[in-house]
Amino acid sequence: MTLRRFLSLACLFAVQTAHADYQPQATRVVDNIFAIVGPLGPRTVENDGLNATFGFVVTPKGVILIDSGASRLGAEKLEQAIRTVTEQPVRWVVNTGSQDHRWLGNDYFAARGAEIIALRRTAATQAEFAAQHLQGLERGLGQRLAGTQARPATRLLDDGATLELGGETLTLRYTDAHFPGDAMIFMPKRSVVFTGDLVYVDRILGVLPWSSVTNGRKAFRALAALAPAHVVPGHGRPCDLARARRETGDYYDFLADKIGAAAKEMEAMDEVLKRHADAPAFRHLENFEALHRANMNRAFTEFEAQ
Image (cartoon, rainbow, N blue to C red; front, side, top):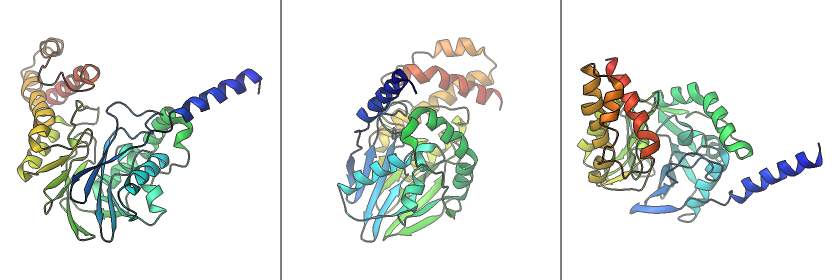
């Protein structure tokens, strides 16, 4: 290796190390329930793929962790955030989805004795997308992905299943909206819902090639029917139902009622996207400029095919 090559690699490692001090923080939602709110932008070396909102519940028998991060290192950092609140170990990890940041930290916690739980359909999708997610993260996180192993959930539940963990009651409901296999977790005794990637707050939701606006709208209405007092979104800060509706539910309605309706009327896509490019009700949300047009494009295509 030449000296120039060595110095280049050393500089790259130094840059990665300099950004390695990002540490997520725990925020109390209510009583013994906490959220860990990550950055609103993309997965980066700087945030170790923790650009999402996670949650945990402290019980007398251990911690219930909602989603485990996108890497081994991310999982370690979630554990460190939990340690600022309690010394109780993570005994259960419940995955709300199949996208990388929801479950690729499973192996870290399983190796420490945690039981990994998800809906059966969620775990199947985790296995299906594992290689693809790891390849994408390797490009984005580089050396900081080291030690990450894909471990889908092993305790598999049917849709609508109810869990009793450490004296807490959790019900898992299939949403299948933002990403195949997505679910939300409702704690009826606490009136708290962990939405997974169904709800985005502070930033605009993303419609991916695998997303379903139709499913998202239906799932949000099911969430609203629960009338939770506290909403822990998949991205952004915990909030009430009214804010979740303004920043996610209303956007699903917009995509269906404006873009989807125009697609069903066989209007020209370019004209529809141009007409609704501004969307002032949502322009204030982070990532609007980057995602709104693509969201409309994919919504149009979805409804056009119906």
